[in-house]
Image (cartoon, rainbow, N blue to C red):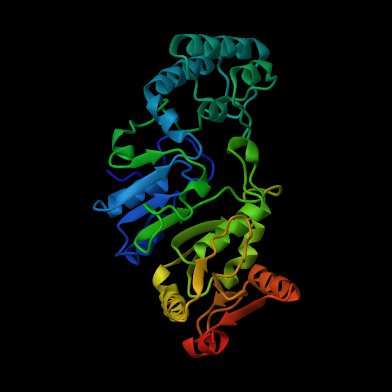
Length: 367
């Protein structure tokens, strides 16, 4: 069974993208490892495993969603009880819940925590808090002054339970690491790894997530993507969308949405993906130049991004000389703003710092 949406509520899951996702993943036929780096609801990881069962699929459960899945049966039991209370009180869909009924619900939530030691606060927030509002602790629920009936939608004949999640997570390797853990990791970071990147957007409400990424985080992520297989999601509310034109050779899919309301205008969604083979010529150039430099007795050091976004690819050392090189292929390889900044900064400090596009240019640089 392939789930077209996540079993439990999650803001920002990629429902509606399945067919486009399927087309995307077909273009990464050589990848044997797929990493859902920011996790979310795990829906992308689930799809990846269903469509590529022979690959190792890692769900980096950045938001702790798997713990919510582990308690689905308890959550369904609570849902049935709350639904019954709202029905008995005659409270209509989207109607504010009276104070007396709110007190009953708060008592039910406390008893649930005392019985099971766990409460899926995000899911319960969807049932009884105003749209888009979330709490994360029992104390916050107990302090809440305004509950709303968001459960009994018009036309519903019964309160349907959430589906079991056994098949949803089957076959996935579930980790919970900081997303930078996978940068340069020798087990995961190679040409046969595909990174699924759906980070919290700049203007997403950070409260319902572990936290949106900063501009520096997003910049580091873009640099990381430069030489990896990636499938990247963003939307028109995120300033990072301005950088999409810099994704050379990438395929871009756009989903346009009409306005939700006057207060919530339309938000376009984007999926951008590119196989690392687009950068294979650049890697071949770097490898050929490095071999030549070592033959000439130079030390060749690969410079990894450690918070210095845009730092050149290589440093070559010999006889007191330090040469910084950024490799780009002729015709299509363009410097990012950060890469240009670093070359200029190093040149001002009187270092040799250049962009190299051919082996002949490199041989002139390395005597």
